[in-house]
Image 1 (tube, rainbow, N blue to C red):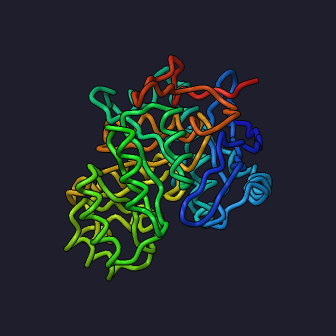
Image 2 (tube, helix red, strand yellow):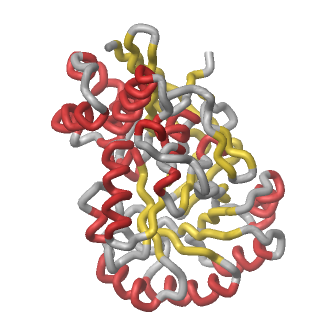
Length: 337
């Protein structure tokens, strides 16, 4: 098996602002694992909040090339277990390798990934489209530019309720709110009252990730469901979220890939938590991997490639919120030449 590394700077269509800051480009590394005529692709994007950088990814991949290339006859789960001791301190990179190997493995079998998992892509959730923090005029303009059945609206400003009130005047679509740790307990409970009146479906990660005591107070008093994101990173966090959140947003890069994400979904369901998988502004490589988990999910946030000027890959297509799978096997992703 041969490792091929590609790095990119994914340019965003619009400056993307959340409560922590603004980004205009997303550095990305795409991993290809090649065996004979087959290739599998995986991706990790840099994220300052999690202290991850593409230069670090590339250096570690080159350093551990022999470990990565050494084995190609294991199942995806066995390969993930094999890699974990070497990459347990870099879940983003482990994710890229897990996606690539899983893609390669299922392509060699001549099947799509969801078929390997014995899933059927029927009645799967629609994806939302994200509107970053901006002036109200610009946020309305973004909604007009991309008419969509579900919007995720980034908040964390002093004018949050006013923003949603104004946006609601321009759309009857479902609204989801993501405060990215930008609120306190009192603010969250109070906002949940007003946001419910405005037809909001749920609130994602209103409090700082480590405020578990506050999360419990919010859980007991909110008027809307609360979904964990920054508080739900790895597999052991699922049980922590029980009775503190109504659901979890699992990110493949944070947990180490498709293999642990699927286990996290199963655990969350067993605890009665709603399940969601979110993206971290990947190209169609990372987005196509997410798509195969949708038969297991209540919600999905996989609009990352739609936010880009220069998607470097093809794969799953998103049309008015609906997910259209690629005709290719595996995850269906393919690098643009």
